[in-house]
Image (tube, rainbow, N blue to C red):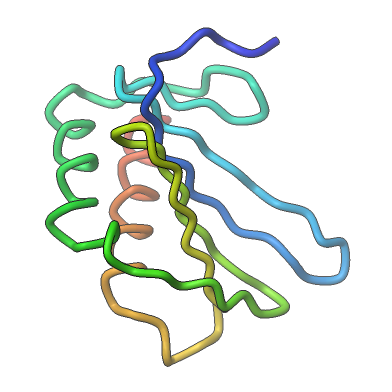
Length: 115
């Protein structure tokens, strides 16, 4: 069952390897965190606002990065009617620092809210 959510979202996840499976978390503008169509947790409004502001602050909207490896991470978001996806090799040292910074902060918020 898919939850009815606000239009803007941020998705982060990882995947690849032998099985080729993806783990995906979706954070909606209203703070709901969803995984596999089920509500997982709720992020505080201030944290959700900061996460969405970080897209601009870290200039993710100006980066085009589609360099997945066997194991990869990704950030996908919809903001201002635009969907943008950034994918990178989990083991690469050549990835733009802002991608890992955003990914790690979003992961931290998900873990903090799921406790």
